[in-house]
Image 1 (cartoon, rainbow, N blue to C red):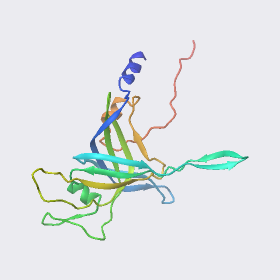
Image 2 (image 1 turned 90 degrees about the horizontal axis):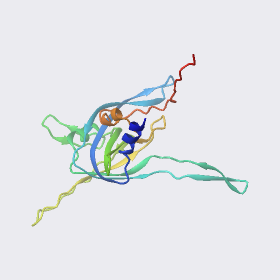
Image 3 (image 1 turned 60 degrees about the vertical axis):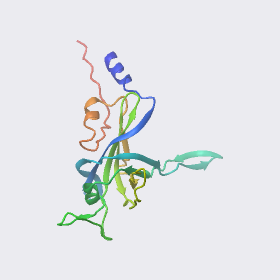
Image 4 (image 1 turned 180 degrees about the vertical axis):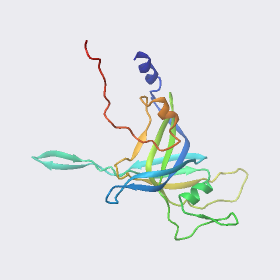
Length: 212
């Protein structure tokens, strides 16, 4: 037990910085209950989105106070997910076609139509820390089309990036986001980018030896 404690303590971060290992997994279909109501998503293959520059997402939804007996009687929690921007060097062809709805024609040209339907996806990424990298997943995201911009080359070259505006909402099960911490087991951590993490929230049970 002492070794387990020391191992976890060695992964406890004091600070975070950087951004890397951005991956996405398209929601290919939804599972449904007996009434046909969507329940859990089915994800496709996890794909890397290289060239991550920055990620800035803000929490949506504010708590509301319900007053009674001349005091705050109950606090209503409104978790409406997140909104923000993901800046990358260039959006990949796979992301453009699978998520943004662009078409790769028979001549290898990306075509954008006004009828394009963007797809929902999970977004996975990590921040570096002073002890261990913190890995995250947003379970249900949509992305807007990036702007198209550039400028003439001068004495120095300024790299123009592309920015995706993200909206991360809750799944029908209520799941919004998950991240690793010092208590995350090694297998879960190492397999984080293979598939969006499926939480195990079942109650832990312990067994005791029967007295003889």
